[in-house]
Length: 261
Image 1 (cartoon, rainbow, N blue to C red):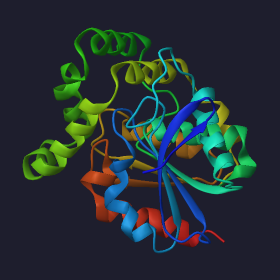
Image 2: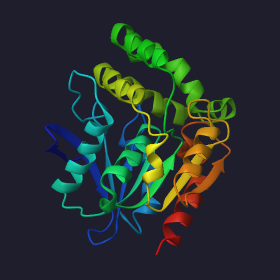
Image 3: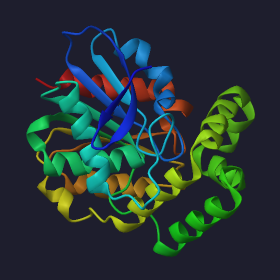
């Protein structure tokens, strides 16, 4: 996979699909990497030029040793778009990736043609929880949070029937740089987009997991109510709905993307 320098850091990315196809940019969740979209890319690449990237502090992208902000994460995405000469994109982000998508649709609306916000929140958790998680990974490493994270990300039924998928995601979590993870936790801790998302005019699909303890379905409902004209789809899944319910996720995503003129 290629790596380029953008916004002062080296960003790892991957492109699938024809060069002249419309661009779909996909942004990963906290603690994963661009491979979280592996189950979706083959089908999407038949219609789109799919651009995936590892968010700052994740995968093979650099992890500077300081707290991050969503302005910083959003500028990373813009810089990647500029370097790849992508004037406009459709943007799909899950969890933290969805929060980046909201920031982009507010701050550079002309660059975002469609917006898909998956298992995300405009305001995510309490300050004390994020501070505790930052302290844990800094002192004990990523393996210290594995059990709690996987329980939030997948339902018990899925964990029991799909151990290979769980192992794949655990591997990505463990490979995440602790300081990069901590930096992104600080960005999530400090952002509140509950009121500013009223400004978003981009055609938007919100996907929520009906069994998601990390970003409850109520968070998806709030986003859908506050973004004018947004569509809402609920899936029978926990937090990583694209992995737990790939067929239902693909149906929702494809239906939305095909319906846009």
